[in-house]
Amino acid sequence: MKTYINTLLVAATVLFLGGCSDEFLNIPPEHYLSKSTFYKTESDFTQAVTGVYEKTRGLVRTEGYVLGEMRSDNTHYILNTTDRGNQFTEREDVADFINNNQNRFSNEMYYACYSGISRANTILNQIKNKDFSEEFTTSTIGQTKFLRALFYFQLVRTFGEIPLYQDEVTDANNAFVPLSPVNTIYSFIIDDVKDAIVKLKDPTFPQSGRATRGSAKMLYAKILMTKPDRDYKEAKKQLEEIMKLGYKLEDNYSDVFETTNKNNKESLFEIQFMMGDNHGQQSDWLYSFIPRTVEASLITGVSGSSTLNTGGWNTPTQDLIESYDPTDRRLQFSIMVAAGHNNTEGNFVIDAVLPVNNPAISNYRLSYPFINKYRHAHSKIFNTNDNWPIFRYSDVLLSLAECNLVEGGDALTLVNDVRARAGLKALPKVDADIIALERRHEFAFENQRWYDLVRTGKAIEVMSAYGIKIKLLYPYLQARTYNITQEMLTFPIPYRETQINPNL
Image (tube, rainbow, N blue to C red; front, side, top):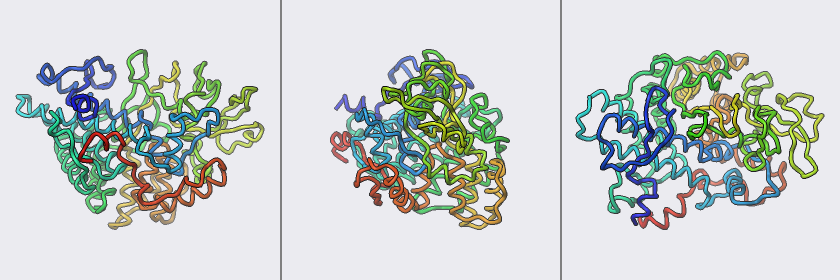
């Protein structure tokens, strides 16, 4: 029992970062401290909150793209016929709609979120009755409740009914809780995020990367547009208030993702990473998104970039590529093509990196599209400097357009503002399908597509039709793949939890 409580993510310990500044995730994790020696000073709590932010990285590092993009019609995978180990097949299963409660990739998302929730619960419990300044206490609670709400939102829309841990787990008596109904989870999240809105401050520019009132309002709007009993009226109100907080679209779509432009004027919240030596803060997903190849230096700019063991995932589909207007600037920035041949060992060799739809692609024996929007200069393999976007101002505009279709208001101008930056002509009218397509292109490879399909009630229809197409394209897909039912819209609770927790 004791081992379970310590290893399950509801443990009461906290990983802290040994320092804090405006660049608050620049200091690496050092060691663990117990509650008996920690949670004494404002500095302790600042470090503890940083530890909760650190857990948001799990939303990406647990292969969040497998659940958010590969589950959808945006991306697929390059089949590895020589290695059929679980590290390959379990990712493929998620993409192909083969649910398994022992799948490590859906399970790790579950654990990553509960680890963040555990840390948040500990902070909220430990800060009670502390004699800190009102400003510090308010900010600490606001950030922590925002993060706890973010983790629970990810859980409920991924797994449906889940255990609801409202307080710090201190012993076996409160370690095992039953599943809570989806509406109960959403009520709890809404209480958290509404309190965060009150306690957090408006954004100031340049931003630090910490949550602000704009972050919380955007999360609240997302929740209202996702929960079973939608509230577009209140979501509309929140989104309109965000528009008064100083956020703007960047002039160029590519500027949003530049590593020299982190936490920019378009960012409402992004997960922080930083490249460097021996501190564990770097990002690395570029090396998963590159085709499996003996040398990827033409893509990475770094020699020795073999991706034979890491690449071939989250590969843009032809279905997605064909859905773009060819003049859309987002297409050429978001996707490039690696062209080349197989060597005598059967491994792919990249001979050129070309834009999508470039006629020269046909001159090469093999070609694979890959995600380009996170390709930025770096000097060491598996050590990149990209942050991961969670909420952007363009999402505010397109979400408000969606609300306005329901509640009344100008949706057309909002959509055309986003399209204008992409170099596209203004539309004469707009409907829900047009907004959905615009979202598909604007947020491609940001782990939004699958959740958008589920939220708008289109997942079964769109993915069933896509399944027919992709089975014709890839004969290796078995008959049992892409048999999409209502039950497939969420993932199963990890098998290990059902065996350990008697209330599950």
